Length: 333
Image (cartoon, rainbow, N blue to C red; front, top):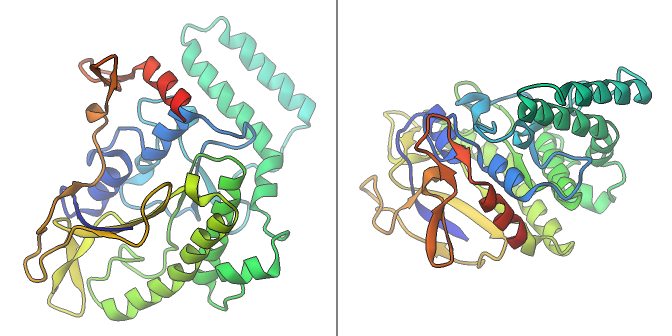
């Protein structure tokens, strides 16, 4: 499904990245992955519920794109790299018995601490980290995949960027298969400026290169999810934070554009083979229904007993999550 009528707020990378991930261009709100991880939990206690497949390149907007905001720290993203050690400190420095003794000490300390909730959240994070020491290397090791699957994603390609993205897309499938709720794959950092897709010049050349890097692995991910029976329950979103203007930027490139641009959806019950919305071929704006990029969490409404309820209490200085909303979400999942 291709949606061609998205709009944003401001043509700045940082603000638009935050809007895409959190629904707020100023940040400090939970990211999409954090909401889903917090509301639905993880199907595998040995893995985090929210994983970012990256290689240490954090896009404009910073870590707030993937942070938990006012939700517990346990719902924040965990970064897994394509090269080197997938996760920092994944090889345990202590014997398992020593690690367990340290965790037990933290639990006893939490029982006497006034900020127990924050301490318990930290302990839960450490416990997940301890379990990840065996589970993450296993799920990141693709050596047990068939040759056909590896070629499907493009792991046999000569180009380093293509192999990088192919590996991360294959790992995304393995993580979904292992029960991780939300996985984000970011494009490799290829060229200068705010690459990979920010072509204010050389657009034909660099867009063609970027398309070559991403096209095969994304198609393979969708194909692989479908043939394994996972696509119907997995929503694939292929998107950037903004589009490019329909007119030249005074060179062979295009400027930032937030008045009408495109994202693609697959799986998750979305009807395939259709397009929604359109932009004017000359005027840099929409000519159809607008879809606002992101969603401010204060707009999250749901109905119980013919009454509308908000998911977040926003009238206090520190927003808090309505707990029974999380319970309802869990039952509906």
